[in-house]
Image 1 (tube, rainbow, N blue to C red):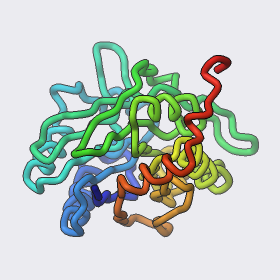
Image 2: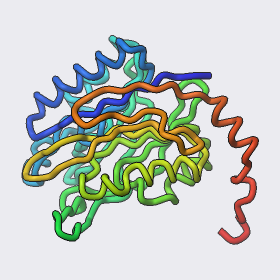
Image 3: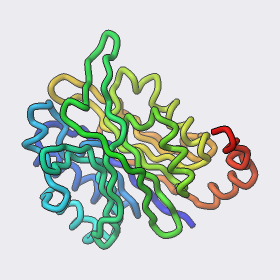
Image 4: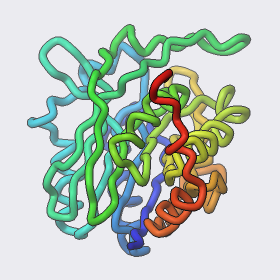
Length: 269
């Protein structure tokens, strides 16, 4: 079985309406290219300073932003992964990914588990946990014969999550991100390819590109990596869309011919 995936590389900022217009444009463009599953980047509808996060957060079941994407998925008959948005649940905020199927039904919801609290030497201090609460559930969903695993941005640095997704049957792991330029230029491709090789699965990563308030820069270079760790397509710098063909036979053949997961020492690990 094959499935065409489309990735949207956006430059989301702190104007929610402009971001929603940009997201819709890219979704329509990818659907016109034949994408059956479309993925937006992390924080697709708002990417801005901490003091504006709460006012821009929306509840999961009362979200105008999600309703707009849900309706697009149903209209275009294409599944859509929003990347992530700011979910408000009581007094807590979560960085939450949501997937709608081609009928607009919600089939996947993932709250980012690992929060980005980092002082980059010579760069910027990021403390996601100042405003965001961590999730605690590992999530997969199915489309046709494919099993997809969900992760977000900083999760990429934690191979334990990806191994758990593989154990849960993931053929493809989806990673929306807003990866920083300072780390992305050295680590982005390296880590994506490593996670693909370790788990013999497809990796699809949709990244933000460019600057956003107050003074941050994201890396871009959205890409799809095959289960042998080879990059099959990569976005250039700038706002853009890319597509790739995911193939289940490739996953099954590599896992059969190179059965590394049969050799895991479960008596030790």
